Length: 250
Image (cartoon, rainbow, N blue to C red; front, side, top):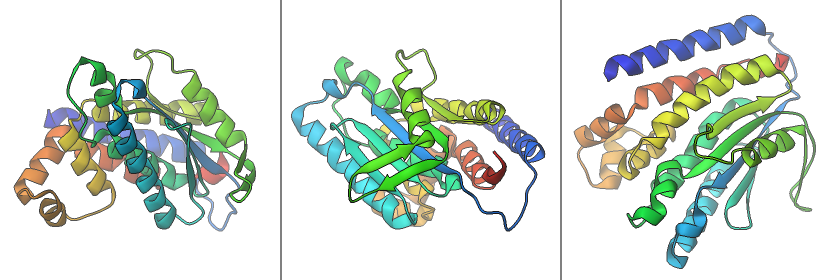
């Protein structure tokens, strides 16, 4: 299994190098592009009223954390099971999206056939990369190509056989390559247990394993085992590479 994860990491790095070749780095260039995240909770109707309250509280808590972490980030929960976010710095979009998904997947939901889809997928995700014409938090307005792209992408995910995490934008070649990464990353997340997702969440926050261990009341070796078995090295490679992409030329 570790060999597969190492191959994945090398594959992601190769894709990023290809992206940088397509759009070479130019310093001191104003980045007009923004990112938007749209997410649809999978099988939310399978949850009990108590679990729905817990889910919404967790989502709102995570959105507040992201707003404090990233300048200009704005997220909102719509109709209880749909999330929309604006990310002014597109390089932060993948980490933010994974924090949302791992937060939801870490919830302690009853294990039965009704909640199987929720426990596996948590949410369907799309990142839109484009301009945002108008972002007005006071008037509750998100308007622009980025949020339209991400919203339409999530709406098109009708069956579990389709990938549940895509990147969309005006540059189709870029979108296709980035979606290759997010599809593989999402496959790892969809296979992660609740406890593994919990460790992923804190690692995405760059917490030390010793601190995570104290928080979860387990040993540091237990944290490391959960992370490594579930494929943390792949997620870390993907996120770190995504954060180095030059989005100013897309």
